[in-house]
Amino acid sequence: MKKVLGGIAWMFRAGFRLGLFFFIFSLYQVLFYRFLDPWTTPKIVSNWVENGFYEGNWAFPEYEWVDFEEVSPYVFLAVMTAEDQKFLQHHGFDIEAIEKAFKNNKKGRRIKGASTISQQVSKNMFLWPGRNFVRKGLEAYYTILIEVFWPKKRILEMYVNIVELGPNVYSIQKASEKYFKKPAAQLTREQAALVASVLPNPVRYKIAQPSAYVLRRKNWVLSQMRYVGNKKLIESL
Image (cartoon, rainbow, N blue to C red; front, side):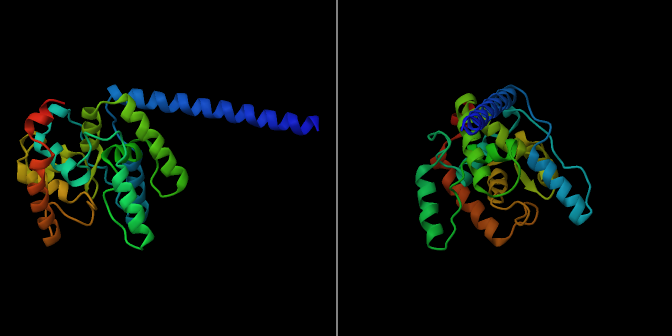
């Protein structure tokens, strides 16, 4: 009996130490990227390896970081409009959207919009690709951490810099140079709306060759942007 109790105590201590180590490590990660800009992300590396092995394309990802002030305010308004209109109000999770998605999934229909910008940053910056309960739980955990330790401005800045915007194209700067032949700071309202319109699937939907669906979505984003905010709102963050 003593051996059994001793084994249980050892497992408890080991689990506690492992949990404490993970907490300290994850906290360090979040605080590190609060102030320093990433040179890559797990998603970028994973996609690069996958494309290399399955498609034979080992070309390095197109990725370049630019600071918040070097991005057109219209870009931030457009991505909030397209992906997370309550971004500035919630604390990482859009409960109403989650409940709506859950109800529709039970009926066999899927609805986008339940994943906030904060959640997308969490999974793209800190986690591996995939869908399972463990990863979803870690995504929620990291979302809470970045909402606590990062200002909204940093979350937005991180999002537009690590988001995929085309095959092997990451970051708003590279997408802007590739598709519009100009830096991200010079993107117009219409161009920013077009960029945001491909975010549901930036590999399937093309910025350079927008489908009828993408053009309709762009027009919707343009019509909705005025309800989300304006340039002064972004500049005040």
